[in-house]
Image 1 (cartoon, one colour):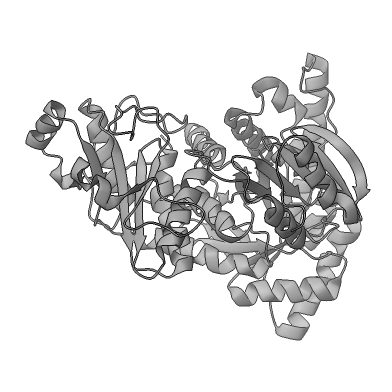
Image 2 (cartoon, helix red, strand yellow; image 1 turned 90 degrees about the horizontal axis):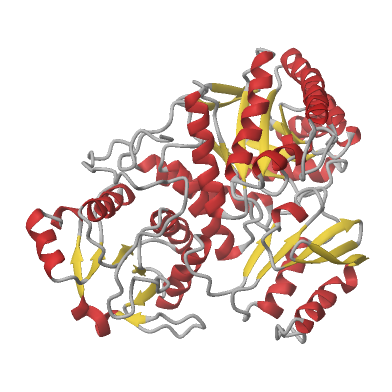
Amino acid sequence: MYTDSLFNYKRRQSSEVNVRNCAIGNNHPIVLQSMGNTSTNDTEAAAEQAYAIAKAGGQLVRFTTQGNREALNLTNIKTLLKERWHCDVPLVADVHFNASVAETAAETADKVRINPGNFVTPQGSSEGYTTEQEERELAMVRQALHKVVTLCKTNNTAMRIGVNHGSLSPRMMSKYGDTPKGLAMSCIEFLELCQEEQFTNIVLSIKASNVVVMIQTVRMLVEEMNSRNMHYPLHLGVTEAGDGEDGRVKSSVGIGSLLIDGIGDTIRVSLSEAPEAEIPVARIITDYAESLKGHAMIQGQANASFNPLIYTRRKTQAIHGIGGNHVPVVISKQQSNGELKADYLLDDIASQLCRVQYADLTPSFLAQLKAKPQILLLYSTHKNPVGEMRAAFHMLMNEGIDVPVIIERSYDLSLPQLQCIASIELGSLFIDGFGDGILLSDSQVSNDITTSLAYSILQATRARISKVEYIACPSCGRTMFNLPETLQQIRQATSHLKGVKIAVMGCIVNGPGEMADADYGYVGAGRGKVSLYKGKQCIEKSIPDTDAVSRLLELLERDGKSVNINK
C-alpha cells in the first residue's frame, strides 16, 4: 500500500534532501515554493519576483532556464537578492530538452529540475523501439545523467526528477502508453540510475492537470518506491490548474488529498496569477494537513475490492433520482441566485434523508437499512473527517449496503479557507469514488458561493462536468504573451459553455502534452506567436497573438459553440 492507513493520518517517512539552507523531507515541515514568470535573463525583475515570493513565505523559488545564458544568470539573481534585501532564498533551475543546460545549472542553482521525458533526444518513437534503439537511448541517458550528477555532487546541488503527464519520453510511451504506470516507471528508472552513481539528494514529482491522474500516479509511485525500499521526498502540484476558484479547488483536491494520505514534503500551487499569490493558498493546504496530527484513532476495515489506484465509483441503487447512474447532485439549504443552481433544496427532500455519522452505523441500524433502504446524509465532527467518513463508506461496502450517500460539510471559514479545506475534504472522498451528492454550507459565505464551490469540487474530481474547464499554466519565463489577461478574455467569451475543456498554455514545453485531453488549445509558439489546437491537432500555427483570441473564438463558433465575441 501507499499509506499505512486509509483512515488515520500519519506522515510518510522520507529521506532528507538539502537545498542549501532548506531541508526537505524527514520530519521537517512541508516546504512551500513558487516559480517566477519573468525572464530569467532580467536580473532586476527576477530578483524582485523572488523576493516577493520569499516575503510571502515561499522557501524555494524556481526559474526557467531554457539555455546556458539563463542558467548562468541565476548567480546574478542570487547576488542581487543578498545585496538589496539580504534574502538568501534558494533558487531552482527548471531544465527541459537540453541536458547540457542542466550541467551549467548544477553549478549555479541550489537545485536543478530535470524532466526524464525530454532529457535526451529520442532514438525511436512512441509506436515502438528496437532493442538497439532502446539500448542506445539508455546509454545516452546514463552518460548525460552521469555528467549532471557529478556536478551536483561537487557543488552540493540537489536534484528534482520531475515527470509531467503528457511529456513522457517516446520510449516510455512505447512500453506503457501515457498511463500512470508509465509516469511512475519513468521516475523509477532515473532514480535507479542516480543510485548507481550513489547520488541520493533527490526530490521526486509527478504532475498532471487531471487531478485524478495526478493523485493515482503519485500513490502508484510511492508503492513502487516502497517495493524497492526507496524513501525519497515528494514534491506535489497540479499543473495548469488555472486561476480563481478553479485553480484553488483543483490544487487543493490534488495536493490536499495526498497530504492527508501522509504523502508530500514540498508543494507548489500553480495559479495563473502573480507567483506570490500561490503561497497563501499553499499555506492553508499545509496547515490543514498539519492540523490532523494526533487525532483520535479511527477503527475502520478496508474493503477488499477497493483499489485506490483505479477510479471506480461506489455502486449504489437510485432513490428519488439520487445515486445509481445519476451524476452526483448538489443540495442547498436555500436556492441560489447565481448561474449554477442546486439540484435540490434541503427542505424539499429532508423527509427522504437519514442524517448519520460513522458511530451511528451500528449492526442494528445497518440491518434496518438493508430492510428499508433510504438516502444517507453523512457528516462528521471528527478532527480527521475524511478518515472517519472513509471508514463509513468502507463499512457500507463491507456490509453490501448500496444506498446513496450525500456528504454534508458545514463550516465557519473565510472564503480563501473554505475553497481549500472543503476541496480537500470533499474532493478526497469523490476521488475515491465515494459520494452521490454534496450538501455544503458556511456561515461566513453566501449560498451562491457554496453552491458554485460544490460544482467546482465535483468538476475537479471529474465526478460531474457542469461548466467549462480551463487548463491554464501559471506562466513562466518561457511565456511570450500576457497569459492571465488572455485567459480572462477567453473566459469572458466562453464561460457560459457547458462541458468544454479549453487549454491556455504559455509555451510548447508542456503545452501540447499537458493539454492532451482538452477540446481546444491556445499555445504559445514563440515571441508574439500562438498556435491553436483542436484536440491534439494543430489547426493554425504561429499566428500573431494580437489575433489569436478572436481566431480561437471563430474556431469555437465554426464547431457550433456559441461564444460571446463582443465580450
